[in-house]
Image (cartoon, helix red, strand yellow):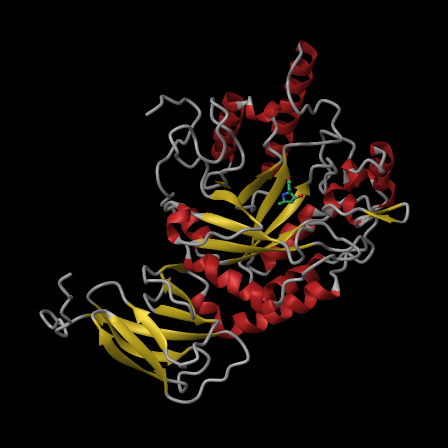
Length: 451
Ligand SMILES: COc1ccc([C@@H]2N[C@@H](C)[C@@H](O)[C@H]2O)cc1
């Protein structure tokens, strides 16, 4: 064990009500919106092949020219209620919204910089109305904040000289001021989603970041902060020098999903996912594969089955409207969630052996076990291996209880689930298992071979 002042301050999961609420979300929405949405991956008629929200770093783009985009930020069709309604129909329980991305442009009228909406043609606060609109729909809000700030002249990638450290000390105060400002202006936010914290300059601020995290938690009891905010005094990030998770949930699953339960080390976590391969801000043309609703539903099921939340990204257009591809995916996901949401909300790892046909999710609300079926075997029969001494009492379809199933015990704690009629579904579907304790002593006489 290494003595740490600024490592993890808690072992294991948070067990308070605020975190239990976060753990139960299942499905979330990410929103990336800002000046980068205007060029949308194109500059002087050339397409930037990186992520659209990173276009300021492209050698073809002068930072000053990029920063002048502030004078073009005027989302005349922005209607937060319409975004929140789309999210509601989609079935998301929380939304993570960019307050300030790496480019430093603030979607709220921060007092600590001029590089905000207040000095754009739009003039008005964006964050406040968004928080209000989502709160009205009963969707919780998490505020995304990038520590790295390309616009702020005091930002440094590393601290090499005395001048660097004088500038970066100003930058640290600026960061603290903005974070306290966000928590004060938008007190209904449930948490902060930090990004832009990997550079040496910030990694060297273990003590400062640790005390700032403590100060924010004091200002906002119950605040949820992930593992990407700070490093320990040896520069370790996400997991401290003793291998313990820092923050309240693991934030390492960006555009990737854990394979098995041991990959998540008993921690809470979220997976943040783009619809194209790698675009967070609005990009005029999406290159490569665009994920289908069925792919996204399978990602959602997989995340919840492994104790995580699945957060799907939307990149609104510069005029404030959502693009057609995102609206149609939100609709398709929402239609599926309308029927199957009880298998997703309050979902947790069920402890069943993973099967090829899909995912098991246990409900903390009903204690029911849900089978989320994506791949029907040629046999048409679905194998289930329950944790030992757990028997299956009943199996029925969530879409309609009439579509019932017969469970046949084929071995110790092993069953075949037989559909009572030919299943030819067009969409992933859910079977509910009601289970119970196996009768004492009734071992079913399955003798293990001696080998
Ligand atoms: C390759 O390094 C990065 C760094 C930051 C990101 C940002 N994190 C995502 C949540 C988006 O905000 C993306 O711009 C992506 C890739």
